[in-house]
Image (cartoon, rainbow, N blue to C red; front, side):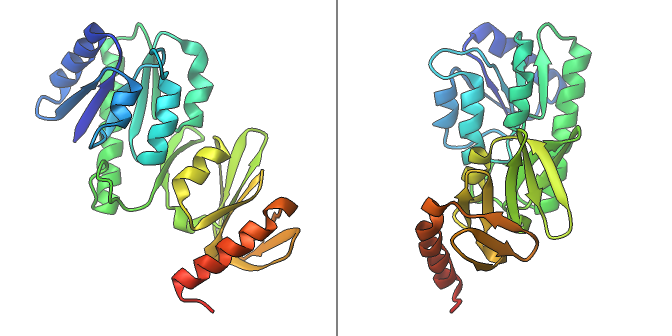
Length: 242
């Protein structure tokens, strides 16, 4: 397991690293002094303690970019700025530690994150930070952190700052941005409308205004119609469909 600490202050890095070593002395600890250094790394951490206020690229932007590269990273914000907590939900943060915090609280959050990582690894048989990983998107919904297989998303829509994932037999709602989801799911999906993202695998029929799926339907923006048709035909050729 690889535990990362991203903070532009060396003393804060060492303080957090000492806390981690005290709890998990045999685990690898990687330090980053900026968001860009984190994103340029050859391997990403499985669990990341991330500061928000940093020069050049703040922690929120670093988290958004990291999500598009490595959806499974368990992100824990560590900051003195309590007013970013709702933005933390937008990037699927596991927790939000506000300084100053007690050692007991730090230990509780880290142990929960380690358990989450172990559960994810057990389900997929894949190390969380490997780039050739089984597909999965970590989201926070109703106070729970869950992994969603994008292959099981029929379509997604945005309503009142929430993303609603329509699955074959249920719906999942969470606070997030469609743009971030679009980057995570890959080219098997298409943004047919500002508020809709559809999975080509579930498309039954379509016209210039509507896409009918195996469960539900999505709007088609007129300006997106031609691109949708091209991408859908390309998708079918890849899958060997007529």
